[in-house]
Amino acid sequence: MADYKTLIVSLDDGLLTVLLNRPDKMNAVDPQMLGDLDAVFTDAEAYDDVRCVLIGGEGRAFCAGRDLSSAKPDEDAYAIITEEINPVLAKIYHCPKPTIAAVNGAAMGVGLGIALACDVIYAADNARLSSPFANLGVALDSGGHFFLPRLVGYNRAMEMVYTADIIRGRQAADWGLVNRSVPGAKLRERATALGKRIAAGPLRAYMGQKELMKKSPYLEYADVMDKEARLQASLVGGPEYEEGLAAFFGKRPPDFQGKG
Image 1 (cartoon, rainbow, N blue to C red):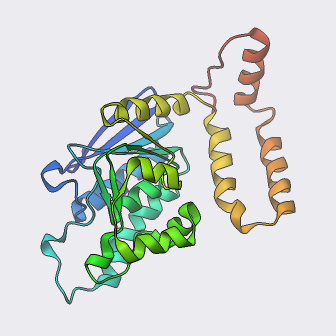
Image 2: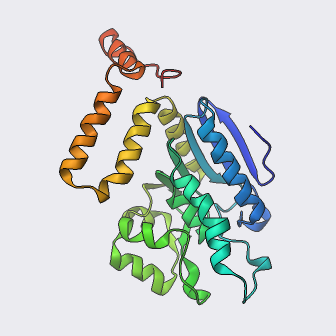
């Protein structure tokens, strides 16, 4: 894999760990980081050795949002969002492989968008999640209008819009904004353990289910049932299923590595 100027990237047991690495700026997103994220997710999709991706933040924050140091009142917001930010968030959201966000400290604006684009979110108990756009006189972006009503419901989503209040990790878990909150000192350890567990699993089956799960809210019941059957039929007889059956009858853990 390439070198990334604003990321720390490592691969271990199929788990690609990507740490946002601008700690002096609370990992605020700038054009270089957006380019690096786009590149690393392109690589993650292409490399067979990558079976799961974990995104975290180096230092005391996950990502405090967009770096506003060069922002101007008359800047072309539409171009910035649609040409620079949204394509990267879409690359994360549409990554065919499992993704996890480990949210430490602040996750705000586009930082929250990065986390919400992942499949699973673990947050530190003292994490601070927010869409602070009300304080800037603008609207939430980075997928907020897509994710928030789906995860926390319309009323709580609008409360977040109207107040820009900080949602701590435990409250975020209670609301369903994240999967669970864990003690901050254990966050990376717990998220890594989950990532390695997923990486050891049946990747082809996971990828098929991820694709269908994203489509299912827009499909009728009968369509989902048919697509489930077709997915199952495509997996039965494949190398992962053969290994799973052999492990079941051999009373041993399955080894899915290299069988996707």
